[in-house]
Length: 106
Image (cartoon, rainbow, N blue to C red; front, side, top):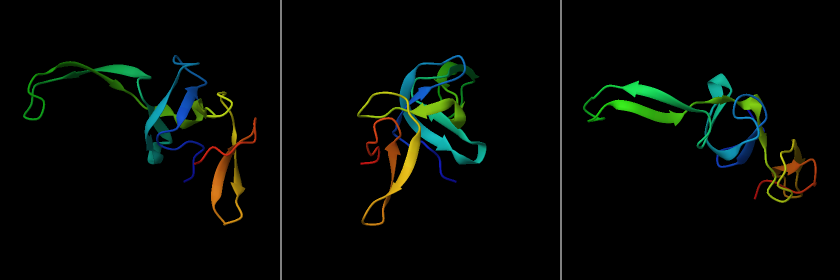
């Protein structure tokens, strides 16, 4: 499935408790239409000691957000924007910013 954001894109959260904050996409979970954004939607997980994790305790980590609640931030105009798809002369499909009409993919 194709999404409006990709890994390493800068996105802004447009709904929920993290509304208005920006961050970088760490990973996309395609089967549940969710995205993990760096240092946003932090939750605390209580973990017990194990072979891999020697000392247990409370670990803070990022929880996934719904992909519909994030919007791509254009690098040229620095605003959250919708994206469109444009086919270049060489046949490559690229995303472009609907506000400033600049190509987002490099």
